[in-house]
Length: 477
Image (cartoon, rainbow, N blue to C red; front, side, top):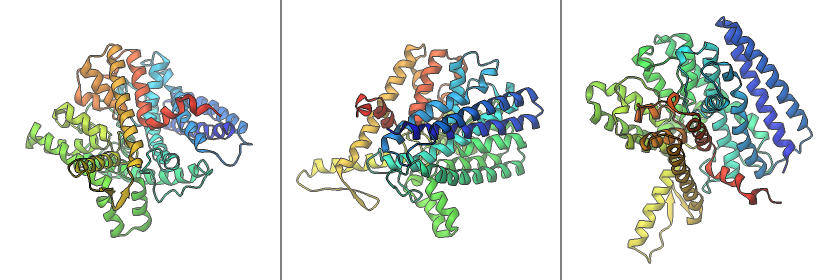
């Protein structure tokens, strides 16, 4: 295993987050929060030096890597980055243990949007920091999906493949910078457009910046406590809804639209099968919300349906999508968005493939002598290719069940454990408030918070990737 090459790219990751710390420090100076700015400058220097040392250790790394190297890097990245990102949180009085700081950092970097902090009592420097963590997390999630997960092809059928990435053996890491820069450009451009129109619609500049970064990453963290309607206009709510859907959309389709700039490509945004599945989820939530709240709250139901379907979870108004039966809301959110996006969940493409396979199996039961190949999107798919998807579904369900049991053992009631577990696993932190408002993350004990941290990390990393890394056979020569 090329440990030196893994160290090299982990060092680059630390340097990247040192730059984000420095940007937060500049924000602190602009906000006249000099103590916070000084803290971030010190941490940026320390993190940058550590990153340079680690990168120096790996400078003589081999130029090629194996699939195993990429898998180890993926898991260690999601463990290391929240560790570094948690350091600033330790200075806040509300954070009285490292586990809480790690929870806050992991929630932001995995774009989960769960928090024990009241943003009204948090300095703006920290609000900017966690907004940058959300945006960078969204960029890295999409980049890893396009590069590493496509190369590993953990899902068998290859739903992570895209025109952005052509697999070349041994050149996975070398594509991270080029693809990552492209994804950052797309998400940065969308966030800027969202920010611009939010400001035009009347949202304060700082609030618009934080919300734009959170929306495109489907993060869900907000700069103020309470509902969005208190400081975001109706037009602003629609702007955020569109941005959230773009964050949950297929990044390769978005790139084609920006690159080709014609109506034919624009149609692909609406014709893409994952996007149609997402529109179907939004429609189901809107209908359920309309039946639960009536026509007077239809606008709130509409925008909040898009927030939930994209795994962002913004709360626009007091009465809205949270009136939908909790079981339906949890089921829709667990499905998630596109495989090549910042959204969490199982991913729509997996569910579509499983339903297609199930339908074919049912047809075979009524006509056992007929040869019925599974066809999807004009392709004939071998039954063996579905094995890994069924394994992923089983692993996802197993983690969900074990998470509920662990949360129950930590002191949560069953309904609270289900809501909290679904929120963490689907990387939709605000789902907890929508389905179980009697409890918040701040009401939980340290053990429950630690369990949720593990679940949200497992939800962001491919389940099969984690199972593979922890298997003893993976480390045998």
